[in-house]
Length: 151
Image (cartoon, rainbow, N blue to C red; front, top):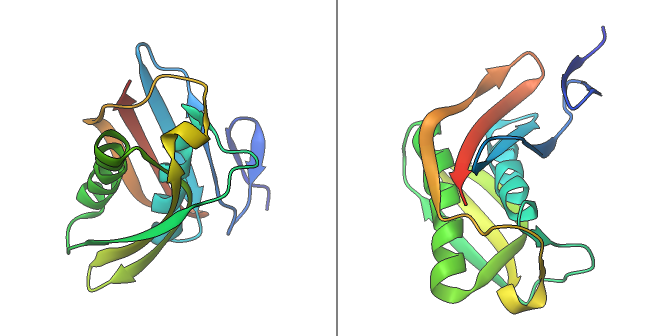
């Protein structure tokens, strides 16, 4: 069975993971996909970060852990991305790697971070997550999500 070609012309197969930015007037629109919800959420974070920072060759300088309580999948996606934006603004931290695991309906998230000064800024830094057209859920190949962030 062939995969979905709705991901930038690439054929998506069950178990594949990834992310991409798509054109959206004045904002950043992120699509992410993975085999499970937790990996899809981690891909969304990396997709958002790669819209404004070049992470190639960057190594983390610290590891932070975030616990997100039980919530709907929509709330988990928005809250996780909001947490990343908060850490950018408050601490100047940029995730270079993300791992998420299910925890009693919520998430345990590990963010391997570096300083904002240690990455090349390539675009507008996001300032907020938009709830309009936010989607996350299972699909024929695992999980996928779509979210717009204000830049």
